[in-house]
Length: 159
Picture 1 (cartoon, rainbow, N blue to C red):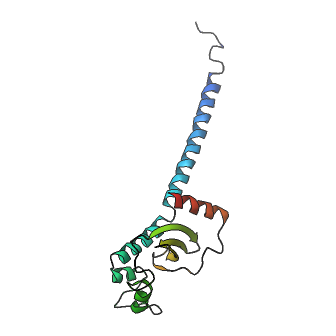
Picture 2: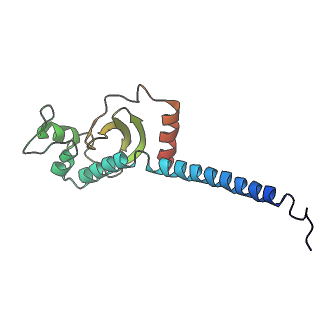
Picture 3: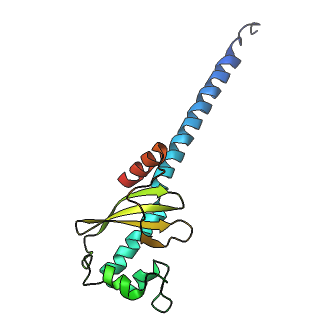
């Protein structure tokens, strides 16, 4: 016949084990969430610039111009297709973008500043978050960047 105190403390051990697993589960979920956030941070914006650069490399300038939210038939008011070709066409300083790559990205206000290395030259492009249109960046780096955002941007650039 079991004694009265044989099960004394068993529920405390069970509770301790549950609390320990619960805490580890929460920590694991937070680490997973952070990892996914870092990997996905600025990903669509960087992809848009990569696609833009790939179209320039293929010399498909009309398609590349559409990334700016413009078309040859309906050009942008202040950035016509002829000006676009002057900046990005075969005779421009970026005429050869075969070794172009995205170097860095920084979230800033309503968009992302994406830094690209174009045959050794650095160009900062602005990608608007709402519609993923590309343009020239108004800043070299975000004027209101917080330390947390900058750390997240740096980590996402590494991946």
